[in-house]
Amino acid sequence: MARTVILDVDGTLVDTNYHHALAWYRAFRRHGVVLPLWKLHRHVGMGGDKYVAALAGEGVEERLGDDLRAEWERLFDEMIEEVEPLEGARDLIVDLKERRHTVVLASSAIEAHLDQFLDKLDARALVDAWTMKDDVEASKPDPDLVEAALEKAGNRDAVMVGDTPWDCEAARRAGIETLCVLTGGFSEAELREAGAAAVFESIADLRAELPRLHAFDTLDTSR
Image (cartoon, rainbow, N blue to C red):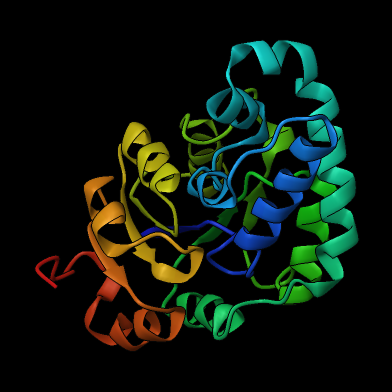
């Protein structure tokens, strides 16, 4: 039996991370909080339930957290038509299924956004299951999403593919390793420091390695 592969969605399969950062920037600014975009991007991948406090402090979370999340959602909704799958994203899922992996998506997205990503990827009939923010009490970097994905897969012999340090931390806390791609805008050094077993420049580079990474258990992590 091939290992389960848990795939992050935002920044890994669909090119959303900078859209998220801009939507958060505008949401904060409209409430009188101006934060630099680079810092906002550094926290993309963390769930919205933690994002406001992590960037602006507990006081802002208590006063404005729900309003900021609602504004972010509205602003991101205005951009979502511009979001496109990353090159090779659907092909990666096809490759994994052809190699008999169980494939589960683990996304911090809300249901309305994940529905659109699934449509853009044309992935509903490909993947075995998916989890989302609405399924769990705590989002990444807590392990809840990964744990939910493992439960849906029916086994814990798994590896995660992600693009942020938050993916690595969530997977580590669930007891599985992570392979990362650079498509989320985080550096190889950042991802390795967070615990990534290997880092690939793109989905295409990861796909090229699949023939020698049967079930991801022969991975050469020295690269």
